[in-house]
Amino acid sequence: MNRFRWTSLIPVLVMALLAGVTYWLLQATKPRENEDVVRPKSHTPDYFADNFSVSELDQSGTTQYRLTAQKLIHYEDTETSDLTMPAIRAFQPGKPIVTATGEWGTVNGDASIVDLYDHARILRAAGDGDPQMQADSQHFRVLVNDDVIETEKPVKLQRGLSIMTADGMNYNNVTRVMQLFGNVRGAIAASDASGSISR
Image 1 (tube, rainbow, N blue to C red):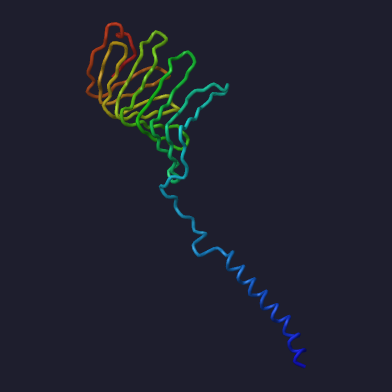
Image 2 (image 1 turned 135 degrees about the horizontal axis):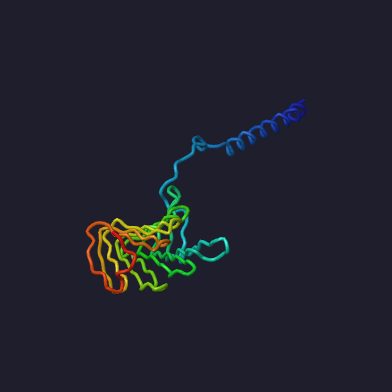
């Protein structure tokens, strides 16, 4: 009689054990409280790159722009990146190469705006009848899609033998027109008198 009771209890015990294991698995895989809540992205680095280089090509596969930096740190919330020793170079057929550099900088998510800071410099190589041009400031903003470089900070411009200073600047690499703003001072050499500098 006792043997019959124990054998009849075995299926009940197995079912209880299966129920317990099933409950434990359900609890282990169940999303935790607030897990479905979308948390705002934090301003923390989500990836890094050393000796970073990226190029933008035209439809024929020719390099139009190249952005390089010793170090890149990308942030997930703003989709921006911090750059160490950045340099952006513009290549246009038949036009002098233009290089913009800084000690550090930032670039937005689609690489259409590059900000260069601290000892920032623009250097346009000599060519097409124009002498070398150099502009120095504490900040330059490169608008890649518009092919424009601008600053709201004091700037020193050297074009050939001409030297000028101003409170701000806008340089259009397509039209090759340099605009200087506010408190413009300097001397234009006779050989540069026909250059395209306006204020």
